[in-house]
Length: 234
Image 1 (cartoon, one colour):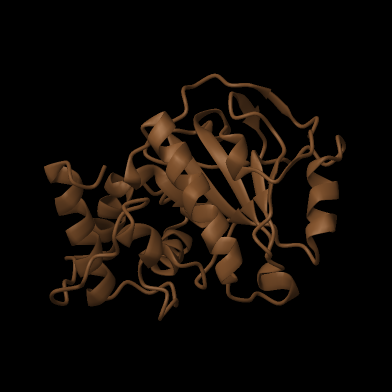
Image 2: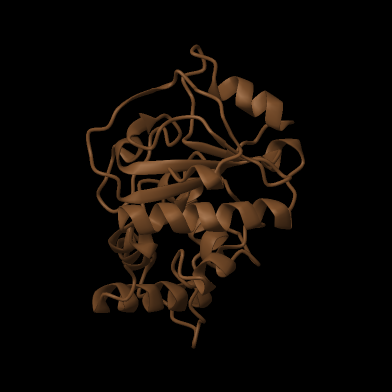
């Protein structure tokens, strides 16, 4: 942790030892009415929830769990073969009431605090761009965060996450099963197919989230797989 990126340290008791090396970052929203409420919950031993960092809407960064420890932010999740995502990831919570309490865009001050923190984490841990993910990517049947208002395109433009591909054409897979297999190959858990499609749309085409497979998301997925196959989607 570079302390110049952190405004305060509030030690959460909710962590244990990692079983895997750090290979990903998971972005969340807190989904609670206030930053104070979220901070209190992540420091409550009975809640058994935490993250490594929390960033409030004014851009203040709080460190909660040392990066070398396993914070409890991902829950039951999966990404690219990893089932113990907590052990393999650093979790960053962005203060936002979420879909339950009045979901809203993430303020510029919050994003400006996230970008250098994320850049520092990715660089120090050699994290591939394809492993900078949202909670909904790793737990599509359970989670929606950080949601459709999060500016993934900005992260992609800065090289901090994969760029969102342009759909150069409509591409319809032979059947839904073929799309699901392609989605699994890219990294998603497809045990709930509709939820996986919805999560993919929320991340890669947030303008229309309906859980339906269509030619546009088919083309986006193909572009991502082509980049992955060529090694560019690391």
